[in-house]
Length: 70
Length: 255
Image 1 (cartoon, rainbow over the protein chains, first blue to last red):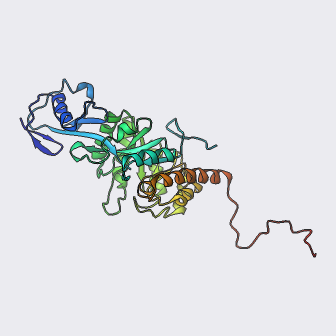
Image 2: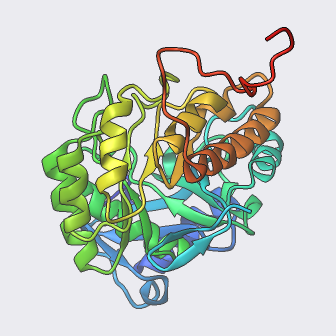
């Protein structure tokens, strides 16, 4: 399965948005999704729905976090 | 005592809104925000692959209310999605709406800004649009339901102060919502001028973050916003082209 995550082609192992998040969270060394959000194909998916939201080939995913800004 | 700034029915303890970007380090950022007295601090929304310094800004500022921005967005569509992501990430429906129309000047794109404001207000956001110092645009944004308008003092990051005080005075006089002067403030006197012209508040970032001593400048800005607010409320004397003696003119020695 090929996904576009934050503009980059990726082939993650997981099948749901939560799987994708957990993979990213490991890289970020964080265990809390506080301050993060995910959009799937241009629509925000609430954190409470990550576990039951499947991802499929060609999906566009944006994972964002709040950070310093003016 | 300074009366509180009220936006969308929420009372803020300070009329100074402060950005969180560009400080020498995170400790200075936290100390500067504390020194500024700001209750509302701006943050940006970025894809995680682009994260860098300041990535855990949010946890450091847990006692503050966040005002996420849509900085960098160039279309209403992108700004709307960014606002929706910000709401999910931070649990706030407040958004500093920026839709940039020109990369050199970072001037807002008025038509995209109006469209994004319309949609986000409909979706229940408290929209604070960053806009040009155009009284008509400010009026249109307020008519669409913006909770405040945030005209630029001058270009973002320029430190040029209030470039068009006449426009700003008109905007403040006519506004049906709070006017927050956003961008261009370079030093404390610029903030005083903005407030004396009738602004309800000032939003700034670079003037503090890039000062030689950000914490001292944050303190100066706090005092400046308060001084400007009190001066505006007090009502200044008229300007005269000739002197007006302040001491009594009767009973002069030698008369």
